[in-house]
Image (cartoon, rainbow, N blue to C red):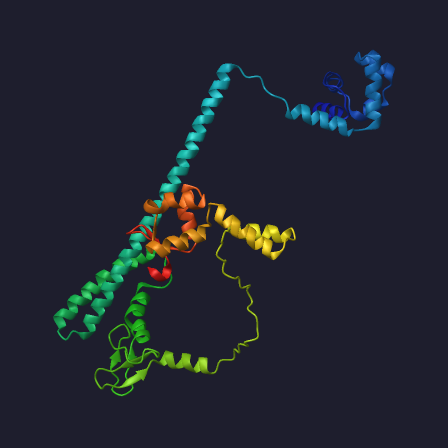
Length: 361
């Protein structure tokens, strides 16, 4: 162990490997090498004069950062020589390991999927069992014959064992009987309303809603014809009447309100000429004359003018009939026909294939 420590210590001080091996094999330690002279290193250990002097200088100066970095670089960059057979064997083993990892990953995915499916099946089965228990308990309480009650009691015992088994597999909180009590006793109390006149139970899901009073959640008792409000509706109305929230009309909204996008309209040739002439400082009469002349001799009309003119004549625009006239009159491309119709705010009927205005559809 001392030889290895001396060898590593010499390497960290920047001494080459062969010299470090010679000194470490001789059984010298760093403290002993410090006490030696250059002549002793040359005569006793066979070192050359320049190497002996460099060894003494390195040991006197202590560990150097460059020596550490060179030592680590040599250790980390060391690469074992492998023949071609070993290299092929290593690559084959690597492929086998990767394939095994992928198989285990797929197996775990399938196992999680099957576990989810099993829990879903168990949950559905438990729900059906609970429904049967609720039905049997209801019939058991209403049954007058002892024979039927004993049969129902046996069925309840069997269904209870099935529910307990599924309940334990799902690791649910509580007991199966808690679920049964909730389905059979608590839920009807929540959903059923009693008439304040005759105490007849009314189910909100049924047809007992007062259709003449749709603004309020009121019911009609079919036994006595009494109209009454649901208790929860009274509580909500009382809370709304005593509301502590005040809304000021001067308060701006908390979130920014964005204006709807405006309809994009391409400027006509006359508008562009008018803007250019006004920018150059021409008079209004000259600008108007130039605009009228350009409208007469320009040869192309704007897309909005073509749409208004075509709708005034035909009351609709259809691609098969008017595409060629659209290209010739406006100079737009053939592929931009539907885009310009949509940008102009027209409505497209898929059955007829015609573009019309929204108010004319």
